[in-house]
Image (cartoon, rainbow, N blue to C red; front, side, top):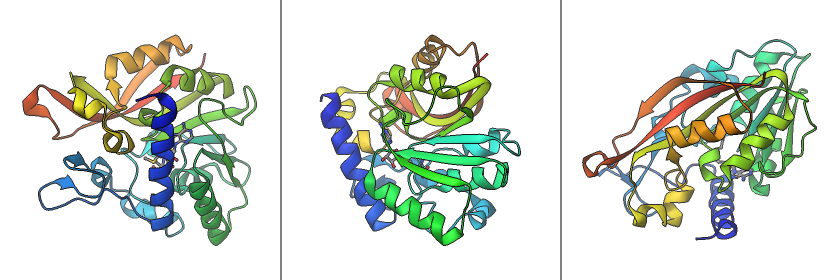
Length: 254
Ligand SMILES: C[S@@+](CC[C@H](N)C(=O)[O-])C[C@H]1O[C@@H](n2cnc3c(N)ncnc32)[C@H](O)[C@@H]1O
């Protein structure tokens, strides 16, 4: 599968999710999900925003995350925050609340249907300090050194060129700024049929890479200090010598 085809499939998948208003990967009784393809695991259903959901407009949390990066991001009043692959806006709205009226939260997403939905949610919630921009993480529509904190939730795994994504994160961060990103990672060797499945790409599995490789890409982008803040292991593939986890990673731009 080439990168263009992958991105097109990802975009189509999330356009459908945006229109339907829920994750396509609903868990079946067997533990595998149905409409995303056989044996596709629904990792997103394991994230529970709990009472935090009450702080965001209804329909902003579509069950698409694999962590809660805002909980670990140390957001401060007045910060400018950027969320990569913002979906319907859940983490942008949580960030907007945390940074207050003197701060700003910006979401970027490549899927027009998601941007439309997120903007509707912002209007519903009457947010004056949020903005949603249509664009790609590999070419962020954001000025150099203008962001205090970059967030992202279960998205970089969907990006074929992860090195470019993290170079962009480095470019837009102010010196002393940091990212806090939740994402899927793998261990062991994933079988080729999983790696080449479009449904597994869209479901945040096939595009995930080894944790060590991930951290190496982050370091090469310029981040000297990198720390894993949280980890969840999934019951996926384990008996076959490979597996999937989600991590919440922090990196500081010195
Ligand atoms: C799994 S969903 C996560 C949405 C949101 N972060 C959440 O937790 O609800 C992935 C989102 O990332 C977006 N996305 C995927 N690849 C992208 C890219 N290369 N550039 C911008 N957005 C991208 C998709 O359109 C989709 O809205």
